[in-house]
Image 1: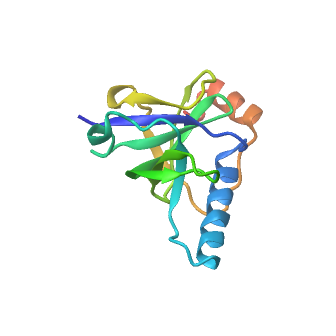
Image 2 (image 1 turned 60 degrees about the horizontal axis):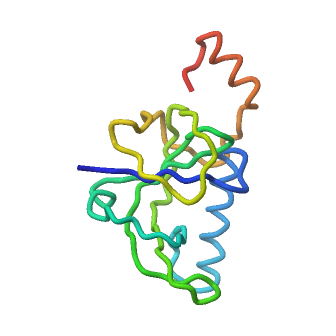
Length: 147
């Protein structure tokens, strides 16, 4: 049975900022002749590895809401810059926007059962720009948008 991971997206205020940061990171890796793959290092290795790798995604919390996800490709041993052992959560480049789901702040990552995961909206395209949060909230309140 599939289980997902949810993680705070620290340092990005919008999905577009996350996409831009990841695009730049991939360019840096290519310039350095390293494998061009996206990953997040974490001290705690998920114990439910098989369930995560059975179609699980990394759901990003941006400014208090799950807004986007990326498919998890692998969980593998790695090392932090200082040599500390850790786990690399390797994920796909494609960002998939989701229905917003409120989340309180937490540290590290958390499991997200598939039944509790927000639904998908669309694939995030290049340089879409972001609608201001206040405008998005107003349009949602008027039932003109659902995300």
